[in-house]
Length: 334
Image (cartoon, rainbow, N blue to C red; front, side, top):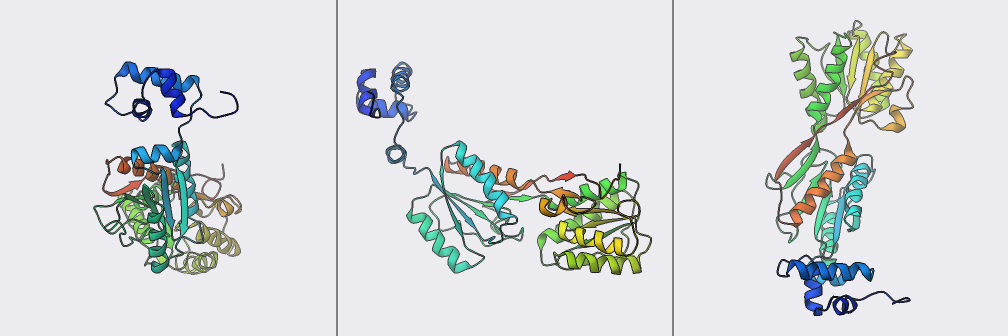
C-alpha cells in the first residue's frame, strides 16, 4: 500500500463487501447492516482511507462549498463576521468562496450567478449595516442565512446584534457607578443601529427612574463629531456626569473634546463607546469602556444555522445575538 493512497476498492476488498456497499457505509446511509458498517469503517481506518471530496459530493448531491457574499468593502463589521463563519466551516471541511459586492446590487447579482454556477450548497449574506436589506432567497435553489444585515423577508434566517440590549447594558453600567446625568451622542438617524441604541438608552433610564440629560445628539460616525458634540453638550448641559456614545469613534472624539474643556474622564464624566474596535478602544487615553457586538460569534452561529438549513432544518426569523460590555478606564479609574 505504500506509495499510493487507498481507494474505495481497497476498502471494499478488505471488508469483503461490494464497492456500492462500502460507499453506502462510508456515507452513513441507513440501508447497511450495523455489523457491515463497522467492518467497512474498520477497513477504512486500517488503510487510512480518505474519501475523495468530489466523489463524496456526487454521492450526496453536495459540493461541500459555501458562498460568502459581503457588501462591506471597508470590512469593519464584515471581516469579524466572515472570520467567525469561516471558523465554523473549517471545522466541517467546507470550502468557502468569498465575493464582495461593494454595496452594488448589479455586482451582487453577478456574484450570486457565479456562486450558483459553482454549485454552492448554501450562502451567507453579510450586510454592511444592520439596516434590513432586500431578500435574495426567493429565486435561489439553495438555503441562505443573513448575518449582521437582516433580510426584509421574515421567512428568511437572519442573525443581528441586539443593539437595544447592548445600549441598555451600557446605561445600566453608568447607573450602577452612581452616574445620574447621562447624555447620549450617536450617529446618523437613518441607521437602524443608532435608532435601536436610542431605544435601549430610553429603556434603561426609565427603569432607573432617570431622565436623559438633554436631547440625543445625532451626527456622523466620526471622532470629529464626537469632539463637536462634547463642545455642544458641555455648553448646554454643563452638569452631565456620563455620556454613552453610539460608536468608539464618537467616544474617542468626545474624550478629546471633554479634556480640552478641562473635564477629566472618568472622574468628572464617564464615557462609554460601542463596537469595541480595538484599534481605537484600547489606544484611547483613557482606554474606552465599550459594547462588543461579538461579531465573530455571530458569524460562527450564522454558519452553524446554514449547516442546519442545508440539512432541511432552517430557523426562520431575525435572531438577536447578545452583546457584552467590556469595562476599561473611561468609566472607572479604579
